[in-house]
Image (cartoon, rainbow, N blue to C red; front, side, top):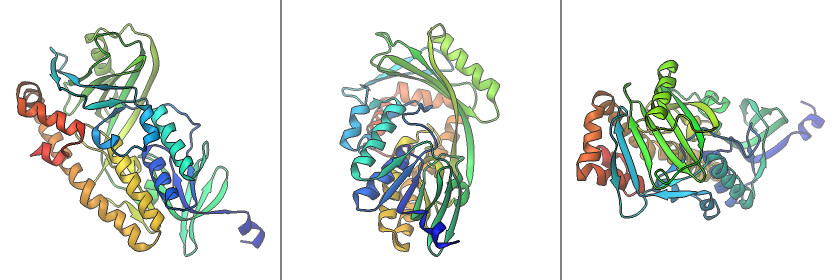
Length: 366
């Protein structure tokens, strides 16, 4: 490479690929610690994101103050049904779940990263990474870049996860619609339905002036997943509502022990396969891993990057293992899970405390 060519390539202390909750959090933390940070995303922002948009207390505690304005509602009541049957409600004296639209939350987190000093560029796609003694070279749709550390938060099928070698244990398909209007019956509660297929469930979340309705089921059963969504909408009397968005996405979680680092490249959030296998809740994992990856990237040396690996193994992987065990119980006996949550005070209290972030999934599993 000529001197002229070398001089045309930008160099950054940290490049973060993907501007969802994991990536924006990593960029904010690294910039706040004085590093020169570039945050990239392939989409135009703000962009729509398929997501239930429920924030448990663990997630709320990790949001920067400016992003809390993205919360559109808080609920203290959840109704549960088994295979579309009668719904039973679990109530609390104070809210235990916050609701957001992901396009609003993600933009707020990007804004917080920029406020901390990061540079943000959307509509830039990363196609290749190459590591060398001089750093990490990135090929992008806007030209070449180099970085001391790269944090990949570009989704479960992104280029950075492939570079690191993330191994996926399972993939599920989520389908979701956003419906116009809320109505008095839905404004103060969320709804969860345990589906007919093993491990499936559906949800209804009110957000501002709309309802988000979705279902999730194992990948490869697309027709059954679409049928489940149609049955859920019809059974709840929502089939005739105006549809504002209709979308789908894959959720993937990692094998135990799957790598989250290769040299000076880290992965966080969905790119690392970090989500909870039972409920497929991923925002808290994205925020926790994003903050930890940003701290490690700011450190920049081998000890700091190894510390991120240790954090995932110590804090996040045990929660995922507990979620996987709960999923196996739920797949075999959804009626038992429904009974424990809706008919016993202990089950209801555990659900509420987990949602508030007062106990982790390992405690819920015990």
